[in-house]
Image (cartoon, rainbow, N blue to C red):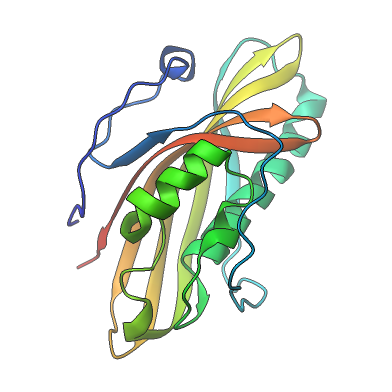
Length: 198
């Protein structure tokens, strides 16, 4: 797999999440819960032909059994929004910001301004007509306190195929770091690699 960019980062929750190092675009944003994503542009996406499969991986602390299914469902929603808003659907399009709806202001700023070619299909948007997922897998490493999840490392692999002038298969892999804010989960950091398959 060809790595498009290389960065290093340190996140203070890394030891709790047991996050492994990747050569990738990385970010550790702030926890601003009031900011809204820029609504410029939209991605036309259908119901996914390939569903996102979410599993629970390593749990640090005590996660109640009754909390597992709701946690997987909530994180799946965040991941689906990211996959579909940033990488999948109809092209060309000029904005991918709706894919970062759950990102904090700092993480979203890094993804849009610094790592756009990695965190979305902005780099190939004008060369493709559609991108369709062929694999969407997410494994959650969870930090739990008193039965409830207080932090999640969502480790993911998504493969997708493009059609248009550029026809190829690509893989996006890495993790998003999340914390709960109210009933929602927010992405405050990421570590991602992207490259072609084959």
